[in-house]
Length: 131
Image 1 (cartoon, helix red, strand yellow):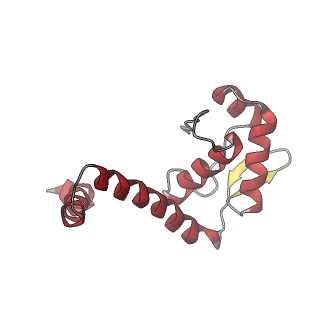
Image 2 (tube, helix red, strand yellow):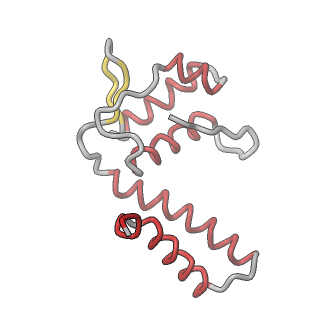
């Protein structure tokens, strides 16, 4: 599980962890039932205080993204969270905002940007990989 933290973007570290794990779950990079690293293990990997990771895991549990089992660890929730679709759309919305801002700064018209998205979508679709 790759999580990248930024000390300079103004977002609290625990929230960066929460957002990135939500993204990994929403994008199916973390599957239902998959175990997350132990709090201490992830804290050591990220070079943060274990309390920061524990807070992130609690937030994720409250959102229904993960299940914390006392003696077994923390697992991606097997039940679909009602927030899952909403979270996916929120994450995509943030990325779209950033993409649109960059396109505007580079003077790329929206029509070209949409066509670029379509081209990339075609190259990533399973049908194009089989040909």
